[in-house]
Length: 208
Image (tube, rainbow, N blue to C red; front, side):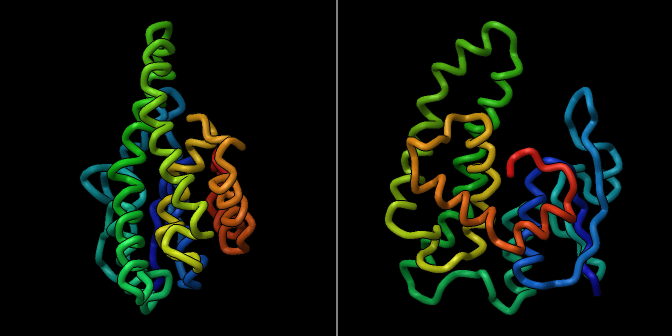
């Protein structure tokens, strides 16, 4: 059976397309556009999953939501490829980054985005909130300075799930050349053929 990806433009679901390209698994895309005024996902996504968010995949009648859960599902589907390394320490690093991306890094980035859209008072609040984001970016930089990929010497799904928050940080949260290891990592993932193939199929994506 071919996996169906319910893909929202400029969203976290771009990572799922990239992972499927890396794994070489067959898939079809159902494209959805954001509301031009609210920038929210369309109501049609609620017909796929009650939360009405993307990414969501369907595979042989099974509906899987949440990026981390989808990634773990696809690791299994791909016979363990891009999954945790065998070494215990590297395995724990893989698991950590898989949860850190959405659990710790994305929330302050999202708050910063919301504040940027509030006139006057939003800009003042952003200046006070930015140090929290910087603490995360400094932490990521220190870890990537130790190894080329998040779980060690090889690219894994940990790198895939970390791509969206760091691309978003590059676009709007102060990630720049002051953190060279992170910028080099972004350049490495953007150069991968599977990443480029996913971009070509996914449509509009503002962060690459």
